[in-house]
Length: 133
Image (cartoon, rainbow, N blue to C red; front, side, top):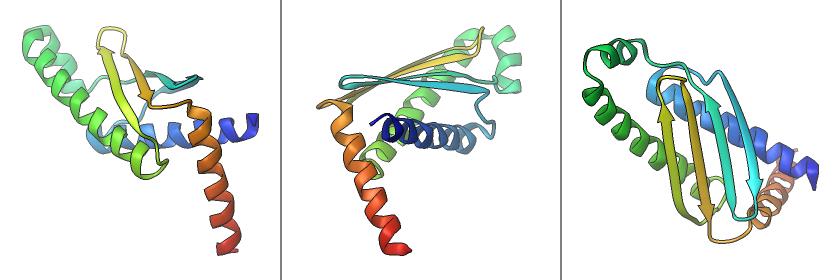
């Protein structure tokens, strides 16, 4: 089971970084994924977009509103991937970003234990791989 959880985490890290590249044109510095029952926790070190970093010094209110809009968009993209790629029923995605230390935290709450989805996803991947070989 550890290998399947590990491969799921690696795939999710790739997806997370891909969303980041799509929205910000900047990859993530580092990430860590933890799974606790029906929750998936993602902690990531981001590089602040230079123009937003500069704007933070001038008008934090404007960048805070921008951050909120970007966080909402990020959650939408991530939710779609979790549903379409992994077949997960997501109840909620909670996310926040601290621009001062450039760390984001994401909590994904599922309708059931994540292991049920992970084993199902890995079985589909194995079958697909065999059929394409």
